[in-house]
Image (cartoon, rainbow, N blue to C red; front, side, top):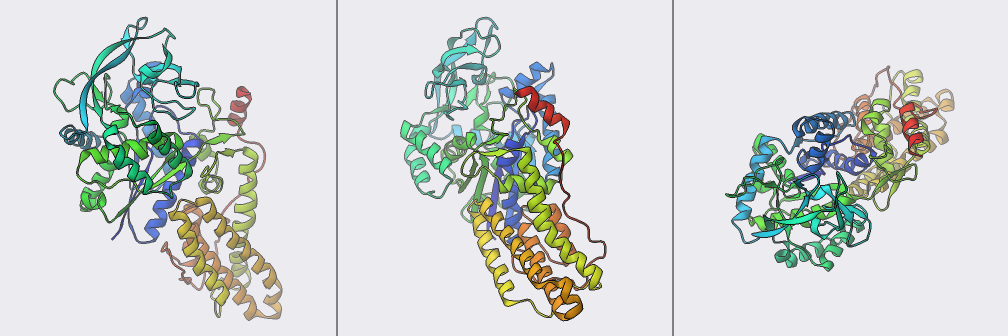
Length: 542
């Protein structure tokens, strides 16, 4: 059996999820549901990133502890993902003991190889705060693009930085100019893997353009060795003598969460971990474009340096950014729609539909209240919901709940057969918007077919033709519910149950001849203005 590993990026547990996170991560759930329907053995994994400086900063701001902050947001993330129907096989956290143990053992093996060495390097120190600063607490000017940046990564150009490379470096807390002392760290010798990494990049010409472009740029500029330890007191301890006051740098342990979570599932399922991270596997990694270098360079470098032939990532589902009403999302300025508010107010399938139909797959995409409202009302209520309701309500009212036709028309059968193949191909290559549009073209065909056959007339003039019309429409609906299930699992599950079909990714005849009398509507219109809390947030940001 083919193993499918789908890794969703691990969100920092230092603040609430917003729509940008949902847009980037939701494709992972579509992939997982699709491959399960194909009969594959799926390992859909992710978790909360509970270590690192952002959490310690939040803890200080709220006079709390990193443990309490990370646990609070981890619980919130689990709730949001659950309400949105994310079907993780395991959603864990980097503070979990099993992850810590896996990372510790991985690093011990890493240190014993030829790709880690000890170096003395500069270290930022704030003379006013009288403390050593982590990279994230260093702010200044990016030496690559000239934008304002933090000391770990430039949000403007995506460059992964060292703090001592930042121009005009200052303390993020007090804006004091920094001085740099020296410390000893362990480094991953990525530069020694340049040939392997370039060969790896060249073997994946069908990645999304942003993944190829970002990775190619890093290659062309020259791969730099990266520290994998830091002078921190929050994180996973370094398994090496003399490093008791240091921790494993977050980027060298959080991406290993994909492996640690898979290892937990393998143990629970009685599956050989090396088989899943071996040859008969296909691995997808789902993330935003700011995380591209960590998945296309850092993770492969760690796997290669480990030296046991672990499976390298296959597919990069790397999203562009989601903007809000035409402006960049800013959590610091409260210019965001928070996921917890969205799921509390609206149908989860309406949310899922918007972000899959408008996902930032090839370019930045925008969330606007008007477009969210319009697409719900026009596509989910007016097209799909209308086809389901008008067909099944008609059967209940006029055909005594009968939906079994004399025969399914050959053209309709062939259309459905082709649709499974085409939509499946689009999903596997990460073209979710195109896949969803193909399904909705079939929805529109179904409504056109219904109108052309006029069952409201033929129920009197030709009852057999009327029954065939409703039966053919029900067949279309049953199979489109299966096709839509990876995208819209809540509403699709209802329809699949009414018509007696399963989630198998293949054309299916209905498993019932008589449907329930209590058929309910799938979607409700969204009218009026957005919730007041959204309006006030937007007003305060203008």
